Length: 274
Image 1 (spheres, rainbow, N blue to C red):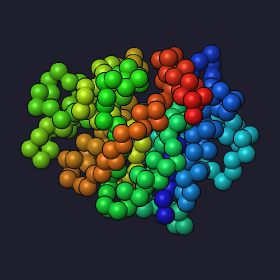
Image 2: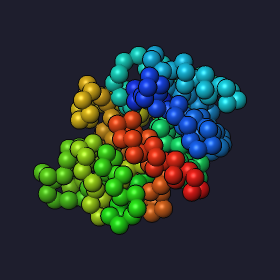
Image 3: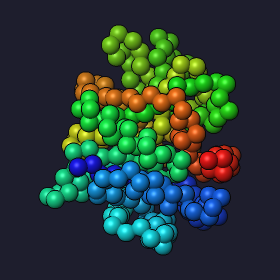
Image 4: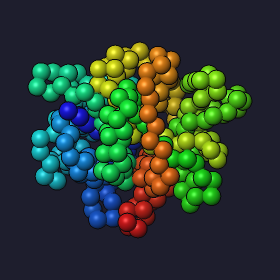
């Protein structure tokens, strides 16, 4: 059985309202569209939405008003980042009757992620018996969305890592593998931009998530536990990692960043172009 976690516990806001309640051109709140896309994957059970104490009730109400039922809601009590939010949800998937061998992890601010990409990732995860499955977009500097990738984590294969951001993983199979995160740098051609979409082996993730150390994101807020650190944990322990490389998902991986007003307009423009 495959479970799903929708991470909606972030504190990005505008005018006192969660950014996840901002609406797309058809009036649908961002978080509601994400839930709709996850439900469309099919076969995911249970689906848990992780929320916080500040905006959680309004997010839950918006989802329920949209007619979605059968979801479970968990609260992240401390502001410790996405990896901690996932850790808050995983225990429920290990209960009797809810045991899920793998868990699809989706960020609540990414309404363009398609059910097809999510299904493909789950299928790949099962096919190769991976502990962690990620997806990435080969960065194209000439793509119209290239300038939107400055705050995304990306994989770098480069012997000279000193100038390429925060190194999280090095010396994998004789070559440097670096996850550069949140430094405002635009990736270079050949880098793999992470989609912020994950499939994890539930038991493995439960074991390693508590060991992730908080790190500064550079946005002025306290350090948080970030999801790309799971890649480091997997590489260090030499567990199987799968990467679904997709050359046509640049539009899907654009999320709404509360600190980058342009991102909301970009998402709305992309939705209107569908």
